[in-house]
Amino acid sequence: MNMRLTQQFFDGGVIKGNSITSLDTTVEHKFSEDTNLTGRYSIFAGSDGMSDQGAVGLNHRIRLAPGLKLNLGYERIQNNIFGNTSTGVRFAQPYTTGQSAFSLGLFSGNSYSIGLDYTDNPNFQANARFEYRDGQEANNMVLSAAATGKLSPALTVAARYQQAGGANQLLEGLADTADLRVGLAYRDPSNDKFNGLLSYEYRQNSSTIPNDLLLANGNGAIEHLFSAEAIYAPDWHWEFYGKYALRNATSYLANNFTNTSAVHLAQVRASYQIGYRTDVAVEGRWFGQPSEGFNEFGIAVEGGYHITPDFRIGLGYAFGDVSDRDFTGYRSAGGAYLNLTYKINELFGGFGRQKSAPRQQQESVVKTVVDTSPKSNSSMGI
Image (cartoon, rainbow, N blue to C red; front, side, top):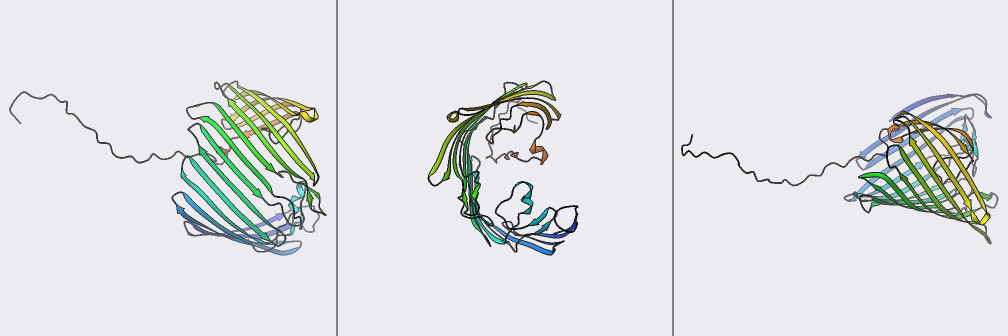
């Protein structure tokens, strides 16, 4: 059990008062290796008086077979989470923009989940999860599944599917959002000069925006994305990166009106390691939509310095602002920019690293020993 007492002071804003006092209690208890209970309870005292919120959850794991586990979960949010914060008043609303997201509240409700994990085979792992949430104002369902397998030491195939309902506090009737990703990666463990990735992605309503809040209508869309990318490093000085993607999108603006378009995206990047700490890079991008006769180009030049082997600072200049979510990196505007990179596995102490599997026990091997010492011709023994 952990307890925390906090006092927040602030100035300005739209609410009266300039401080908020909160007392938080969190509990975690393991009944067994496979069953644990979690809970949290908070009391807030501010300009709008005193309020509280709480939640309790129970998770249980059932071992069906070696490497096959069934996970069951339940969580209850006890009461509505609204009231004032240092950024303003929280209230029920369908959506917010910008920093006004701090005004979103949360209704009480229940969450039920069931999941299945398979991890027994080092060359194939899979998991699936189903979650249903019911609340005071809206219900929704969340589905997810993923699988990873090795076709050979150098080829890995991976797939992931996610689907969630679009209902929230005051807005219902939106279609589900779904995303399917399938990829084939090549990386030779004995020679890391070339790495490649082929992928396909299916998106359904990935950017649904309510068109009319009074009628709860929205814009539907389906996208298919095919892409190929590769990294080639002939030596420690040079590294070349390239990517090409074709995205086909169909938008449903009304029941009787649809629009289909295809866009091409290409990106190339070359970097040269001048010394142990310094490097230079040049990057080019192209975004094209042949049906509309639209083309956009962008070039960026960058120089970098490694303060440590894992922390790099870069300064560059971009000619053009070719930006898209399917590009690697971010170039939303032209002009000078500053780039800071840090390896996340070092930042979080080995995050994302795979531990080497321990050596398996092997049966003992009996070796025949031949005595090669010289023999004495004497018949006398000692």
